[in-house]
Length: 134
Image (cartoon, rainbow, N blue to C red; front, side, top):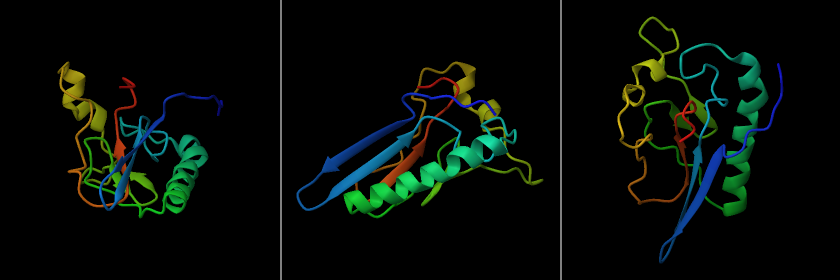
């Protein structure tokens, strides 16, 4: 597997309130998933990167003194406390969420589904589409 550096994989934001702070981590890639957004296996990519995301979430939670609080699934993946999980079809195959995505059909709407309603505390994780690098 060829190794390379990719910029802008994450956005990290914090929102202070009167008596609490929320943090949010947004990832812009599917390298953290066992299957890419087209449902194709990517074991070498996942093995190299999945543990990095888990370590980042753990370390951010510790440094920021915030609980990891995965929110609702996006169109692309299901956030977890240690990263994200693919969607699977009824037959057990990884879903082609990219092919099924309304974003491929040329809409001009946002490329991610809002996950946070602004309440609570936690390091939240959102998956964004990896292909268009929005």
